[in-house]
Length: 103
Image (tube, rainbow, N blue to C red; front, side, top):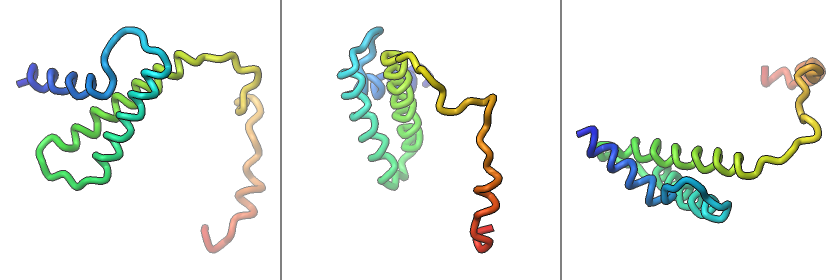
């Protein structure tokens, strides 16, 4: 049973993004588009079949894998950090100016 499930997961992932070692950015973006549409489809339908929620997780795994690959392909040198942990922003004025009705 485990072998059949593993094979089915690989088939679904391969449909969204054909598995290989190296990708160019256009292949990754095409795969991301397919995976995103599949995830969107899974979220807009009310599935009652067994395993339908698993499909969403499989597709989400593909999306995250593609985003990770895109990130590693497009590494650029950052000249400054937008959030410097040694100098955190002062959030007290924002807290003091909140509408009391929201608190």
